[in-house]
Length: 367
Image (cartoon, rainbow, N blue to C red; front, side, top):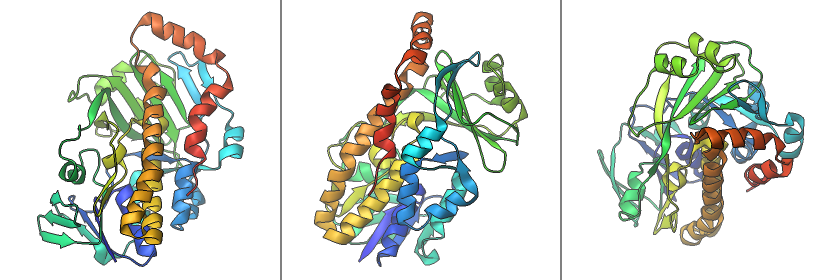
């Protein structure tokens, strides 16, 4: 049995590794000239680690990459809006790790035969019968997996009339700052903007920023330093220490709910199926869940029944995570002084159960 995976990012390589381990021939076509990831840090939450465990790769990340869960959310002044019980989160849900995105891609790539990797291939069309038309010709397989991101060619080929991704109203910057002490993984909310920092195992600090902005607008590090100059430390220090070319900016998109993730011999996963806001940090974790669930279902049940089982298992869950992620970050992007004042007054008073309802469904997944 052969699977063609369109897209060589985290979800695509995880799918390739999962099918390869089950004895399938795999072919991974990726339009970039090499298999790597341009990005910054990535927190892998307990459910993502369990998905990696099914590939035998979880312990590789636990060695030297262990991290604490998020410590909470602060105001611009530095006072707490939400403060998490870190030990309780680890006891209830499991371990977190922090890794550079490129390092995770390298780990997954090493689990796939080198001869299966085909970089520099532009896919033009994917057909339900398992045919993939690309810049080097045509390939066919028993299964095609579309793991080609939010602007997926696979999705547009199979479902040309479904709505495309929608801009959610804010843009995101990511960078890695030089080593310096920070108090855990913390996010700070302003009015229409926020800043998060996550310590990495080597002492560097992964930083992300989000701000309301028109789609396509661009700002550099100087503008970010000015925007966050009067926020609590270590935010100004982190930005001042970063290299001038360190910030990567991407507009934030979300995919409306699809009626199915499968058609014929084709399945989509990750951002191609359910692109979501980064508010819960679940994008990569959900792609990993998708990949191992798809491989297990198809290998156990055959392509037809396996794809239907994958769709039944993954679509309700991922669309729930998309919705909760959107809701989790909405209040950070309010711009009304009155509303943000009410938010800042109310959040510290909310019972712990409110936040548990957002976290528990994501973290407790098992295949």
